[in-house]
Image 1: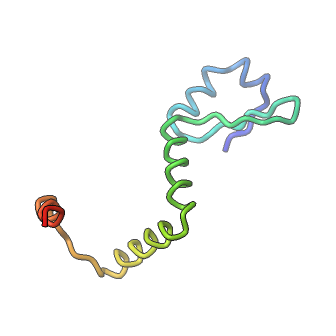
Image 2: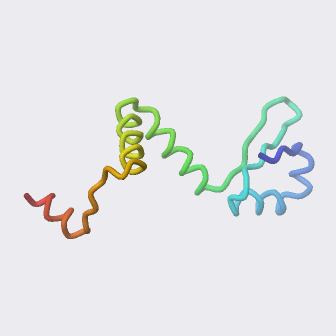
Length: 90
């Protein structure tokens, strides 16, 4: 994460805005009052919030890890979209 003081960001907003907007890395803006702010792309923020949501529920997180382990071990069955839709209709 790039850390920059407020006055530098203020003087060069377009540069740091573009840095955050392209998703290269978030920009930590250090304020004079010790209250810091992070500027990041909306896409990165949404991704972070989704990951936080998924990991915040222990059962859901365990289910995701189980799925990852099954994929890594090759314990998976490939299904086409049509096969999955057929299973939903049964």
